[in-house]
Length: 296
Ligand SMILES: [Ca+2]
Ligand SMILES: [Ca+2]
Ligand SMILES: [Ca+2]
Ligand SMILES: [Ca+2]
Image 1 (spheres, rainbow, N blue to C red):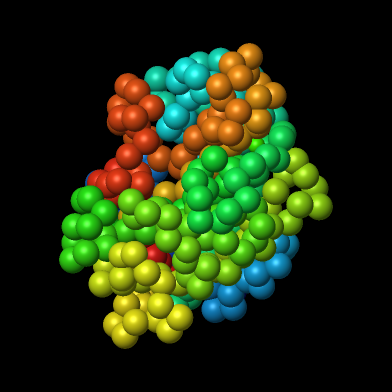
Image 2: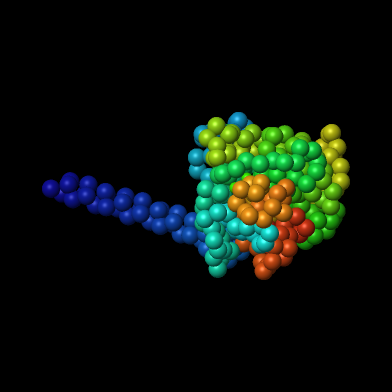
């Protein structure tokens, strides 16, 4: 009987210690999530030992524990453009519902020398009228990635010359245009594959080199200039955003002037402004980019 009592006491003590540890873990996680510096669209990306294979198939183990983030904020939608069909209004938080016309989400992981992004985009009509890869990439259906490596904020040429990058990824899976005031091809910065097997669901799997603001503003040297590639480390904070330019030809509008121009522009963070021009500033200024925190 005494033996049983002792055994029971040991079990209860072990349970107590285990629960206490769990409490500490929960508290730690809550503390991370409660961090006052985290805005509503800021998020944490976790390190992976083995990077995903860039093949447009998101079944890699690397993606398993990464959190999906919605692309749900209407950045441009006013006349003559429109909201996605089925999203008649933008709510008080600046968001639109997921519709067959457009919905999107993404996740991010990292290694010491690359960021990896997986995006799932539903777009009812694929339309890419601009065939010259260096001309007006935003008129095509295209995924855009914005990155301000040191989260400095500010205008494009602030922070030492080249404050951030605005990558427009063409549907051809090759051409990446960074708009600096000119359309600059940056194909060596990203490696990506688009899986169209389940269209209108498009899976974009992307590998990104991260450069600092000393990278040349208006050229893309064949060899990476010295001291421009950034090593990614635990605790690093970056400015980051994902957006999608959705052109559906004139399928969702009676206004023929819309042909050749995007119908909607939807982004991953709330942006201030009451007009399209006021909200569409991420290509000019990185002040409103969400913060991406790297964590191991
Ligand atoms: Ca893959
Ligand atoms: Ca669409
Ligand atoms: Ca910067
Ligand atoms: Ca489209």
